[in-house]
Amino acid sequence: MFNGFETINLYWQRNPDKGQTFDLQTDIPYLFKSNVGLNMKVNIFRQDSTFANVKALPALYYHINNRNRIGLRGTFETSSIIDTLYVQGKDYNKRGIGIWFEMTEPSDVDLFLYKTRLNGGYDYLTTTYTKDNINAHQNQFYFFGEYNYHISGNHYLNIKAEGAMMDSKIEFSTNELYRFGGWNSMRGFNENSLAADFYYYGGLEYRYLIGNQAFFDFFGQYGQLNNKSLNLKPKLYSVGLGFNFFIPIGLMSFQLSNGNEFGNPFKFNDIKIHWGILSRF
Image: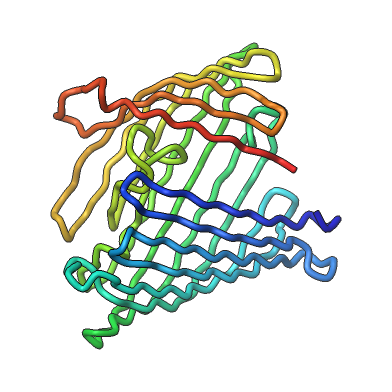
């Protein structure tokens, strides 16, 4: 946009449970024509009239080469309980510093965002629970990996995995847990409907390209989460199929998926429809 590979990302989502997510991220990869970049992200999450979280993540990073970068980031997060009857949550402030690494390999296929992407990080945080006047140290770890393997001809296999963990000597409040599930993570579940202090999932997706304008996909996912406050450790799965194709404003994705916990019966009326548009400009 500004002739220097700068990017601005804007994301807004309203979930079926009345939760709302807003993300604004700005990235300037070459400050003063150097190999040092600046990234600034602001995230706001509000759960109906229960609580609201505001997080700022300023970061500086260094380009090792045109595919790899490593950086330092700060974390400034505030959460406020709106509903006084919500006893599972607590008001808190978080401050900390972390390190992260990212590797991206571009794809020769226009339908794919990239061929390979790896992203991992560690953060050391201090949390202050304001009403209880308690300070606690936390460690947070995150990993994401994705690879598009070319089998032969128009046949591809997408391999994806993600995991995150937070650790502390004090029990976490519900409003500070990780939230995942939905189109971009564990499909077959409502957006951000899964809450955990530790989770992971992995999946395989077979893709068949129709020229350079569309592809079909069939996928399966397996995952597990841990929620200490509720003493839950469910094992999850998701299966489904989809169709992705270019339209004048970008790449449209349409998918049918069903996610459930192992041991529960498969129900066709639990099938979810995920769709979205990715537009590059």
